[in-house]
Length: 406
Image (cartoon, rainbow, N blue to C red; front, side, top):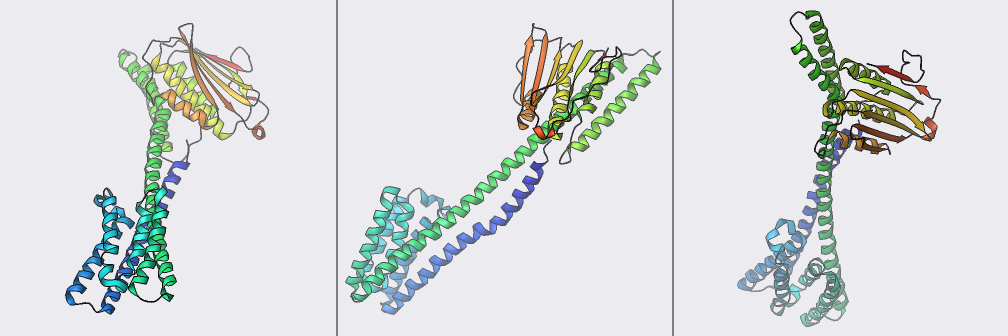
């Protein structure tokens, strides 16, 4: 079982929480800049000394200009306006140039925002062209205001800088929000992967124990009253299997659980013997890396669970061998029963994911319409290669690399 998912989930949660103030901060900065520019515009109006009606109309027009700019710079605050950006941009054009006929010099700050909106709203082929046109038009407004030709360059540069600042801050806020949404989605994906991992681990760990418990409970139920000694023995075995299942659940709730292939072989041997299955174990392997051994132990455990559940098995053969730089585990059994195809997320699908996680392959086949064969091939790193050792205890016949139980 991988222990990285819980740590990754915690890490993502921490980073996501740390980015929330950043996302809000980028929006706040953009709002603060727009409010500051609005204040400058009001100051320019006051310096022009218009009539009370003119001042009120000017402030109202400024509010509309900066309100439209807000919908372009921070569209998430007004999603309803995002769908009609052509109309809002057109309205901003009118509010940028028409009031300048009345307010002249006091209205010279507004073209910069129109230039920024052009970069934010218009499609790529036109945005920079529109930006250049707006910047150039600001020079004409400077000349019309009669503030002197010396202010022409200043006004043009100020318009360009204002547009770029508005565009840059707006894009920064958008990118930060997008990064925040991406982190939230990543958190959801990591948590979902962890739930699937835990579900898969429970399935793989508990399968053989629960199958054994169910079989022995049925056996105990069918024993006649006179065989109380045998019933006591079966109940004791059920208790032992239950304790193993409890230990497995406890281990699964932890971050990582390494499995021993030799231990799983002993467990499978005892389980098959209790269920009256004639089993043969043969083969050998070198000292395996922990990840490889855990994967193969899981394949053996889940493979035996599947054959007990889904076949009328009477004979089972387990083979372990080294082929070049890989170790091969083959599990064969008779008693194949015709069944519908296994749904996604079944035990075999889980096993395939586990084997592929260590760069291995897993395949299944049915031979002669009655023998099912499960084969897992897992590469072994060269540095972990070691002299072969038998994982199976010797059979009563004296063979070194095989064992049989009936």
